[in-house]
Every structure is written in structure tokens, then in C-alpha cells.
Image 1 (cartoon, rainbow, N blue to C red):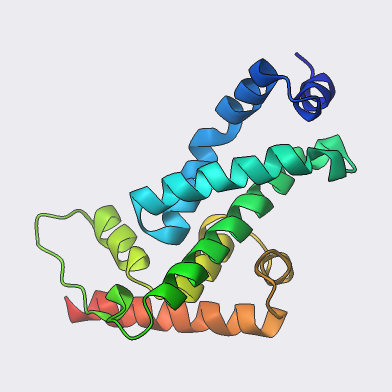
Image 2 (image 1 turned 180 degrees about the horizontal axis):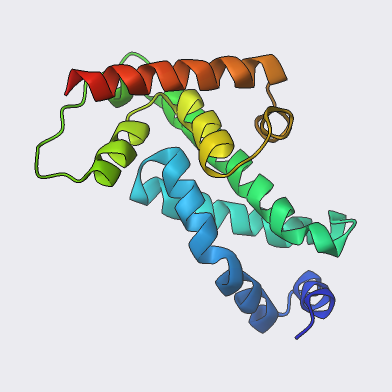
Amino acid sequence: MQQDQLILQCMDNHRVSQKILYDKYKTAMYTLAYRISGDFASADDILQEAFIKIFRGLKSLKDHRTLPGWIKTIVVRTAYAHIEKEKKKNLGGVDIADVEYKLTTADSDVEYIEKAIAKLPAGFRAVFILVEIEGYAHKEVAEMLGISEGTSKSQLSRAKQKLREMLIAV
């Protein structure tokens, strides 16, 4: 099925087409949601909420060729909003990202780095993942997260510094 036809059918609430679109993007978007949230349950919630937004918002998609980037933007924004909501809910408690993380020698380097990234504060983690892993420019990250380009650069710098500190601490 052609992408344009698939999108049109999804806009008409054709459930089979929506399932096809969901299946096409779910794995990559779940991975992105998990990397940003650092939590499997949150990634499930983010993915579900994001796809509801995607199916409701398809009519606003001006150029069907931009669908993959548009979907990714919605997932990123949904993840970021989810993190902010959780942060407000947990105000006054200890933020797990602030707890120093020690790694056992059994962990591989990749696992070690992934765990260290997961322990970054939410804003640092989101910017780090979008710039360093997903390859977005600061301008794109700023638009996705609703922050300034300078804030994106600052968050990335601080994320890298915090990662250095975690890596050296082990």
C-alpha cells in the first residue's frame, strides 16, 4: 500500500490501516520513548499517547513525505511532556537521576553507557539523545522541545559533563 493511500485511510479511521502505520513505526518510536524516559512502563504510556495524537493529527500533516519526522517529533514532545508531568508529581521526593550510579564489573561498556544516560536528569537526557544519538541539530531539538537553541546547547554540554563525572566515578 502506498504511503499517501495509507495516510488517507488512517485519517478516515480505517483500523487496519492504522494498525499497519503503527506496526511500521512502533519499534523505533518505542526505543526513542524509552531512551528519553529511561523507563519501560513510561515508554509504553508515551507510545500509546503519541499514537493517539498522531492519528488525531494526521489531517494537519501538510506534506505526507515528512511523515517519519513528524511522527518522531510527536513522540519526542509526548515523552518530554510525560517526563515534566512526572517531575511535577514527584516534587519534594528524591529524583532518581540525582542518585549516583555505580556499575558492576559484569556490565559491558554499552550497557554501562546506556545506564549512565538513563540516569541523566530528564532535560539533559532528552537533548543528549536527540543530538548525539538521533543526530538532530540544536535548532531542531529546540523546536521539538519548545526550548531555545541556547538552552539545547547548554543542556547538551551539561549532559556530557554529568556523563563524564559518572564514567569517572566508577
